[in-house]
Amino acid sequence: MKSPKPKIAIFDLTDCEGCELQMLNLKGRLLKLAELVDIPIWRLAKSPAEFGPFDISFIEGTPMSKDDIAVAKKVRERSKKVVALGACAHLGGVPAELDETKRDKFMKEVYGGNYKTSSKAAKPLSAYIHVDYFIHGCPIDLDEAERVIVDLLMDKNPVGPSTPVCLECKEKENPCVLLKGEPCQGPITEGGCKAVCPSNGLRCWGCQGHTKNANVGAMEKSLERIGYKDQAENIMGAFTKERGEKK
Ligand code: SF4
Ligand code: SF4
Ligand code: SF4
Image (cartoon, rainbow, N blue to C red; front, side):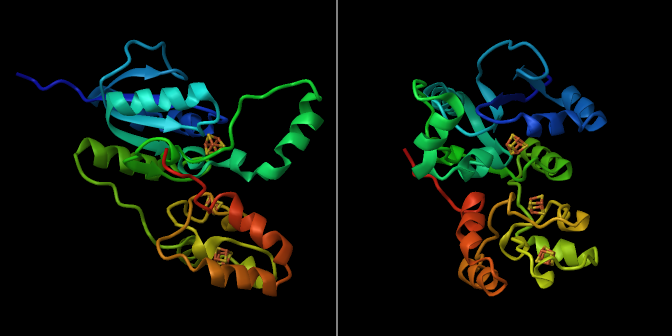
């Protein structure tokens, strides 16, 4: 008897949906994938059919509300494997850039004094549930996404590049942003994004997260040396710092 197709689900919490849009950009590759798997839940692409059990669930976004956290826990219970999709789920993402000590001040400025929020500080998905694998980036890189999905469907453990963005940047012979005296997180950031930012004249801001054994102290000293002492903490803290605690 033919074995049933693996069931894949895609969920989003608090995010901009950019990573899901990237998934749609897989186009032909996604259509081929759709022949191999069932996708009962993907809010962005189709109406929900059932809530599990799932073989693989992808979760995009940061859990920032009680509902987000409840969905994440329910997905975990109903899934064999959970994959964090993109920097929001992996690291807390853009919302984690907020200096939490200034949250009340910003809430008042944006929404006025009477508004009460129930949102929580942005933390990685792994602060709330066990995450099996991560697809890095803001937004995700399509080749990395495809590689992880194919590996998972073949029951292999996806393994990331574990070399820094600098390696891919040097391969492209880009002029070095850091050597021009501007901050760049490339030396401590995991590659796999083809150094897309420095290849387009921008600095790397670390959206893929730290490489294993990243020398954060040396990076901070380098930033201080080129006059970014005040920014070092912010730049370092935004995407690359682990903020989560297991709950
Ligand atoms: S990681 Fe970036 S692109 Fe993806 S959902 Fe978050 S903010 Fe959007
Ligand atoms: S521009 Fe950034 S990523 Fe590229 S080599 Fe320099 S420090 Fe590394
Ligand atoms: S160069 Fe840096 S910021 Fe840009 S996509 Fe790659 S890891 Fe993210």
